Image (cartoon, rainbow, N blue to C red; front, side, top):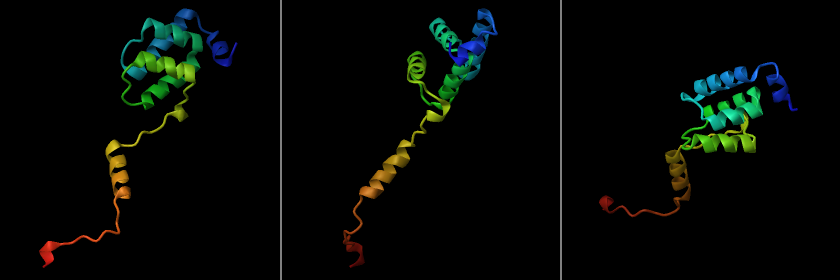
Length: 111
């Protein structure tokens, strides 16, 4: 057994289930699906806490069930979540860097 499952052995299955439901509700604000409770029970309390931290750091999760499955499967860690750039800032930076600066501009108002 891995370390997270060994730590969960000290609790009964009902206690682990209750802990996971409370952690999930605290992180997301809604009750978990039964399928998620089964997944989180399987991976253990510590790993569940890591995945829920990743969820809190992520923005705009459209399909939470699919996101949690992928996070468990791919081994997301809280330090792995990338910070996305603001789209407007990124667009401004690419526009200003692609603008040629050596072109002389004719100003007809000066004449």
